[in-house]
Image 1 (cartoon, rainbow, N blue to C red):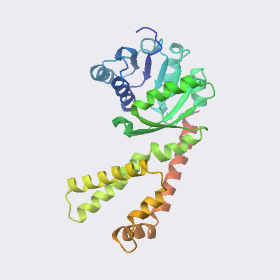
Image 2 (image 1 turned 180 degrees about the vertical axis):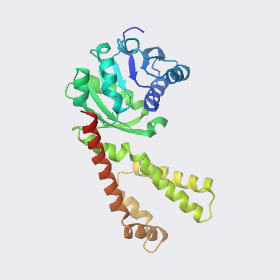
Image 3 (image 1 turned 90 degrees about the vertical axis):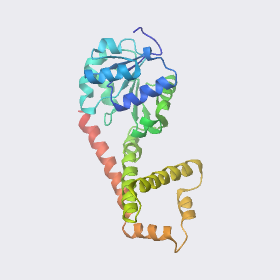
Image 4 (image 1 turned 60 degrees about the vertical axis):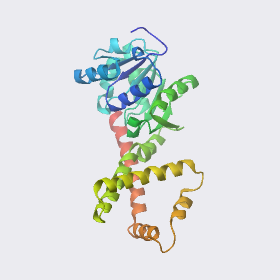
Length: 273
Protein backbone atom coordinates (compact mmCIF):
# COMPACT_ATOMS: atom_id res chain seq x y z
CA UNK A 1 0.00 0.00 0.00
CA UNK A 2 1.41 3.36 -0.98
CA UNK A 3 1.78 6.37 1.26
CA UNK A 4 -1.29 8.57 1.00
CA UNK A 5 -2.88 11.48 2.81
CA UNK A 6 -6.07 9.40 2.90
CA UNK A 7 -4.45 6.28 4.32
CA UNK A 8 -5.67 5.20 7.76
CA UNK A 9 -4.04 2.44 9.77
CA UNK A 10 -5.54 0.71 12.79
CA UNK A 11 -3.64 -0.93 15.60
CA UNK A 12 -6.07 -3.57 16.79
CA UNK A 13 -9.03 -4.94 14.86
CA UNK A 14 -11.72 -5.52 17.49
CA UNK A 15 -15.28 -4.23 17.76
CA UNK A 16 -14.52 -0.50 17.97
CA UNK A 17 -12.05 -0.63 15.10
CA UNK A 18 -14.61 -2.56 13.07
CA UNK A 19 -17.28 0.04 13.82
CA UNK A 20 -15.03 2.85 12.58
CA UNK A 21 -13.87 0.91 9.51
CA UNK A 22 -17.45 0.06 8.58
CA UNK A 23 -18.45 3.70 8.96
CA UNK A 24 -15.55 4.89 6.83
CA UNK A 25 -16.43 2.49 4.05
CA UNK A 26 -20.09 3.58 4.13
CA UNK A 27 -18.93 7.17 3.68
CA UNK A 28 -16.93 6.21 0.59
CA UNK A 29 -13.44 5.75 2.01
CA UNK A 30 -11.56 3.28 -0.17
CA UNK A 31 -10.86 -0.11 1.41
CA UNK A 32 -7.43 0.01 -0.21
CA UNK A 33 -6.56 3.02 1.94
CA UNK A 34 -7.25 1.17 5.19
CA UNK A 35 -4.90 -1.29 6.88
CA UNK A 36 -5.00 -3.03 10.23
CA UNK A 37 -2.17 -4.28 12.44
CA UNK A 38 -3.70 -7.26 14.22
CA UNK A 39 -1.85 -10.12 15.96
CA UNK A 40 -4.54 -12.81 15.61
CA UNK A 41 -5.00 -14.56 12.28
CA UNK A 42 -8.69 -15.23 12.87
CA UNK A 43 -9.34 -11.53 13.39
CA UNK A 44 -7.23 -10.62 10.36
CA UNK A 45 -9.18 -12.99 8.15
CA UNK A 46 -12.48 -11.61 9.43
CA UNK A 47 -11.37 -8.06 8.59
CA UNK A 48 -10.29 -9.08 5.09
CA UNK A 49 -13.48 -10.99 4.38
CA UNK A 50 -15.92 -8.50 5.89
CA UNK A 51 -14.35 -5.21 4.84
CA UNK A 52 -11.83 -6.02 2.11
CA UNK A 53 -9.06 -4.16 3.95
CA UNK A 54 -5.45 -5.21 4.37
CA UNK A 55 -4.66 -6.85 7.69
CA UNK A 56 -1.20 -7.84 8.85
CA UNK A 57 0.65 -8.67 12.04
CA UNK A 58 3.70 -6.82 10.70
CA UNK A 59 3.91 -3.15 11.76
CA UNK A 60 5.85 -2.10 8.67
CA UNK A 61 3.24 -3.51 6.31
CA UNK A 62 0.22 -2.14 8.15
CA UNK A 63 1.47 1.25 9.32
CA UNK A 64 4.08 2.64 6.93
CA UNK A 65 2.90 5.77 5.17
CA UNK A 66 -0.30 6.16 7.19
CA UNK A 67 -1.52 9.73 7.69
CA UNK A 68 -3.69 8.68 10.64
CA UNK A 69 -3.14 5.81 13.07
CA UNK A 70 -6.13 4.71 15.15
CA UNK A 71 -5.21 2.90 18.35
CA UNK A 72 -7.91 0.35 19.20
CA UNK A 73 -5.98 -2.01 21.47
CA UNK A 74 -6.60 -3.14 25.02
CA UNK A 75 -4.93 -0.71 27.45
CA UNK A 76 -2.66 -3.35 28.95
CA UNK A 77 -1.11 -4.04 25.52
CA UNK A 78 -0.73 -0.41 24.40
CA UNK A 79 2.87 0.16 25.52
CA UNK A 80 4.12 -3.02 23.85
CA UNK A 81 2.22 -2.28 20.63
CA UNK A 82 3.54 1.29 20.61
CA UNK A 83 7.13 0.09 20.92
CA UNK A 84 6.65 -2.09 17.83
CA UNK A 85 4.68 0.48 15.85
CA UNK A 86 6.42 3.80 16.57
CA UNK A 87 9.31 3.37 14.09
CA UNK A 88 6.83 2.82 11.25
CA UNK A 89 4.44 5.74 11.72
CA UNK A 90 6.63 8.81 12.15
CA UNK A 91 4.76 11.98 11.23
CA UNK A 92 1.31 10.44 11.58
CA UNK A 93 -1.61 11.84 13.53
CA UNK A 94 -2.65 9.44 16.31
CA UNK A 95 -6.20 8.82 17.53
CA UNK A 96 -6.60 6.53 20.53
CA UNK A 97 -9.84 4.84 21.53
CA UNK A 98 -8.01 2.74 24.14
CA UNK A 99 -9.59 3.19 27.55
CA UNK A 100 -7.52 4.54 30.39
CA UNK A 101 -4.31 5.45 28.57
CA UNK A 102 -3.32 9.06 29.26
CA UNK A 103 -2.04 11.13 26.36
CA UNK A 104 1.24 11.96 28.08
CA UNK A 105 2.01 8.24 28.19
CA UNK A 106 1.16 7.94 24.49
CA UNK A 107 3.36 10.93 23.66
CA UNK A 108 6.24 9.34 25.52
CA UNK A 109 5.82 5.95 23.86
CA UNK A 110 5.18 7.29 20.34
CA UNK A 111 7.51 10.28 20.34
CA UNK A 112 4.92 12.77 19.08
CA UNK A 113 2.51 15.43 20.34
CA UNK A 114 -0.02 14.87 17.53
CA UNK A 115 -2.32 12.79 19.69
CA UNK A 116 -6.08 12.86 20.15
CA UNK A 117 -7.60 10.74 22.87
CA UNK A 118 -11.17 9.51 22.42
CA UNK A 119 -13.68 7.92 24.77
CA UNK A 120 -16.37 6.26 22.63
CA UNK A 121 -19.21 4.01 23.69
CA UNK A 122 -20.77 0.85 22.31
CA UNK A 123 -23.68 2.45 20.39
CA UNK A 124 -20.91 3.40 17.95
CA UNK A 125 -21.39 -0.16 16.68
CA UNK A 126 -24.74 0.93 15.22
CA UNK A 127 -23.71 4.47 14.26
CA UNK A 128 -25.29 6.09 17.33
CA UNK A 129 -22.25 6.50 19.54
CA UNK A 130 -21.28 9.45 21.74
CA UNK A 131 -17.54 10.09 21.85
CA UNK A 132 -15.59 12.46 24.07
CA UNK A 133 -12.42 13.89 22.49
CA UNK A 134 -9.31 15.56 23.89
CA UNK A 135 -6.45 16.95 21.77
CA UNK A 136 -2.92 17.59 22.96
CA UNK A 137 -1.50 21.07 22.19
CA UNK A 138 0.44 19.72 19.21
CA UNK A 139 -2.79 18.86 17.36
CA UNK A 140 -3.68 21.37 14.64
CA UNK A 141 -7.10 22.55 13.55
CA UNK A 142 -6.73 20.45 10.42
CA UNK A 143 -5.92 17.43 12.60
CA UNK A 144 -9.03 18.04 14.68
CA UNK A 145 -11.17 18.23 11.56
CA UNK A 146 -9.75 14.95 10.32
CA UNK A 147 -10.53 13.24 13.62
CA UNK A 148 -14.07 14.65 13.56
CA UNK A 149 -14.66 13.19 10.10
CA UNK A 150 -13.54 9.77 11.29
CA UNK A 151 -15.53 9.82 14.53
CA UNK A 152 -18.62 11.11 12.70
CA UNK A 153 -18.87 7.68 11.08
CA UNK A 154 -19.82 6.26 14.49
CA UNK A 155 -22.15 8.99 15.78
CA UNK A 156 -21.70 12.25 17.68
CA UNK A 157 -18.68 13.77 19.41
CA UNK A 158 -17.87 16.31 22.10
CA UNK A 159 -14.48 18.03 22.63
CA UNK A 160 -13.26 18.63 26.18
CA UNK A 161 -10.64 21.23 27.06
CA UNK A 162 -8.91 19.32 29.84
CA UNK A 163 -7.91 15.67 29.62
CA UNK A 164 -9.09 15.05 33.18
CA UNK A 165 -12.63 15.69 31.94
CA UNK A 166 -12.42 12.45 29.97
CA UNK A 167 -12.75 10.61 33.27
CA UNK A 168 -16.16 12.24 33.68
CA UNK A 169 -16.97 11.42 30.05
CA UNK A 170 -16.04 7.81 30.76
CA UNK A 171 -18.37 7.71 33.76
CA UNK A 172 -21.25 9.44 31.99
CA UNK A 173 -21.26 8.21 28.40
CA UNK A 174 -18.47 5.66 28.09
CA UNK A 175 -20.06 3.40 30.69
CA UNK A 176 -23.48 4.93 30.09
CA UNK A 177 -24.97 2.28 27.79
CA UNK A 178 -24.62 -0.26 30.62
CA UNK A 179 -26.77 1.96 32.84
CA UNK A 180 -29.43 2.08 30.13
CA UNK A 181 -29.38 -1.71 29.81
CA UNK A 182 -29.54 -2.04 33.60
CA UNK A 183 -32.70 0.03 33.82
CA UNK A 184 -34.14 -1.74 30.78
CA UNK A 185 -33.60 -5.07 32.53
CA UNK A 186 -35.51 -3.78 35.55
CA UNK A 187 -38.37 -2.47 33.40
CA UNK A 188 -38.65 -5.76 31.50
CA UNK A 189 -38.61 -7.75 34.74
CA UNK A 190 -41.39 -5.57 36.16
CA UNK A 191 -43.37 -6.00 32.95
CA UNK A 192 -43.13 -9.77 33.31
CA UNK A 193 -44.32 -9.52 36.92
CA UNK A 194 -47.33 -7.51 35.72
CA UNK A 195 -48.41 -10.06 33.13
CA UNK A 196 -46.68 -9.03 29.89
CA UNK A 197 -44.58 -11.52 27.96
CA UNK A 198 -40.87 -10.84 27.49
CA UNK A 199 -41.16 -9.64 23.89
CA UNK A 200 -43.90 -7.18 24.81
CA UNK A 201 -42.07 -5.88 27.87
CA UNK A 202 -38.79 -5.48 25.99
CA UNK A 203 -40.42 -3.65 23.09
CA UNK A 204 -42.21 -1.27 25.43
CA UNK A 205 -39.12 -0.60 27.54
CA UNK A 206 -36.68 -0.12 24.65
CA UNK A 207 -39.15 2.01 22.70
CA UNK A 208 -39.77 4.20 25.73
CA UNK A 209 -36.05 4.78 26.33
CA UNK A 210 -35.47 5.54 22.65
CA UNK A 211 -38.45 7.89 22.44
CA UNK A 212 -37.63 9.67 25.68
CA UNK A 213 -34.04 10.20 24.59
CA UNK A 214 -35.16 11.57 21.23
CA UNK A 215 -37.63 13.94 22.90
CA UNK A 216 -34.85 15.21 25.18
CA UNK A 217 -32.53 15.58 22.18
CA UNK A 218 -34.99 17.70 20.24
CA UNK A 219 -36.04 19.86 23.18
CA UNK A 220 -34.09 22.76 24.65
CA UNK A 221 -36.19 22.72 27.82
CA UNK A 222 -34.76 21.56 31.16
CA UNK A 223 -34.95 17.82 31.71
CA UNK A 224 -36.82 18.42 34.97
CA UNK A 225 -39.58 20.22 33.05
CA UNK A 226 -39.91 17.35 30.59
CA UNK A 227 -40.25 14.98 33.54
CA UNK A 228 -42.82 17.18 35.28
CA UNK A 229 -44.99 17.25 32.15
CA UNK A 230 -45.40 13.49 32.43
CA UNK A 231 -46.06 13.63 36.18
CA UNK A 232 -49.54 14.50 37.45
CA UNK A 233 -49.81 14.68 41.23
CA UNK A 234 -51.60 11.60 42.49
CA UNK A 235 -51.16 9.79 39.18
CA UNK A 236 -49.26 6.65 38.19
CA UNK A 237 -46.02 8.42 37.25
CA UNK A 238 -46.11 10.36 40.51
CA UNK A 239 -46.47 7.10 42.44
CA UNK A 240 -43.48 5.57 40.65
CA UNK A 241 -41.21 8.61 41.06
CA UNK A 242 -42.18 9.01 44.71
CA UNK A 243 -41.15 5.39 45.30
CA UNK A 244 -37.81 6.00 43.57
CA UNK A 245 -37.16 9.10 45.67
CA UNK A 246 -38.06 7.32 48.90
CA UNK A 247 -35.57 4.57 48.02
CA UNK A 248 -32.83 7.11 47.25
CA UNK A 249 -32.39 5.93 43.67
CA UNK A 250 -31.20 9.28 42.27
CA UNK A 251 -28.56 9.72 44.97
CA UNK A 252 -27.42 6.12 44.55
CA UNK A 253 -27.15 6.57 40.80
CA UNK A 254 -25.07 9.74 41.15
CA UNK A 255 -22.84 7.91 43.65
CA UNK A 256 -22.37 5.13 41.09
CA UNK A 257 -21.19 7.59 38.42
CA UNK A 258 -18.66 9.07 40.82
CA UNK A 259 -17.39 5.54 41.49
CA UNK A 260 -16.93 5.06 37.74
CA UNK A 261 -15.04 8.35 37.50
CA UNK A 262 -12.71 7.36 40.33
CA UNK A 263 -12.01 4.02 38.68
CA UNK A 264 -11.22 5.77 35.39
CA UNK A 265 -8.69 7.92 37.25
CA UNK A 266 -7.14 4.83 38.86
CA UNK A 267 -6.86 3.02 35.53
CA UNK A 268 -5.09 6.02 34.02
CA UNK A 269 -2.50 5.82 36.77
CA UNK A 270 -2.09 2.05 36.41
CA UNK A 271 -1.70 1.93 32.63
CA UNK A 272 0.51 5.01 32.44
CA UNK A 273 3.34 3.55 34.49
